[in-house]
Length: 180
Image (cartoon, rainbow, N blue to C red; front, top):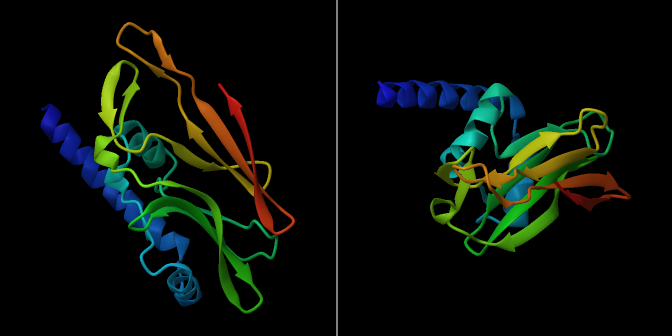
């Protein structure tokens, strides 16, 4: 029964992810900007994230690796993508300009294999990228990347969570953070 539940969950999640990915509308101009930036860049796959992140994305009818925003206020979609190349992990934004799109690197970190990342969710061990991306509900020029607190099976705090807010100001993303 548990196996069937997981299969049904996976099918529903991938169906919703596909629908949302189509809504992102990564067009030719965006694809061209990505190739000019780094032709080895790829977004993370949904199964690279932990189960908790999967569930959150499903509830939001989203994918965990992208956000559609309007960071520069021109009424055109700008797309935040979470991904990597063969050397590093990258959080980037495809920003609309009068003649196409440009890529703004928000954050670069050493590349890790998601299957080797272990975390705890309500006392259960999970593997995969364990952070959430969500838009700021009060401003289309910012978003949050949040790492949740983790506790073991007895409820003991293993590590504090942290929230990184990225605000687009003066044509660049500024990072602010707070420990939970």
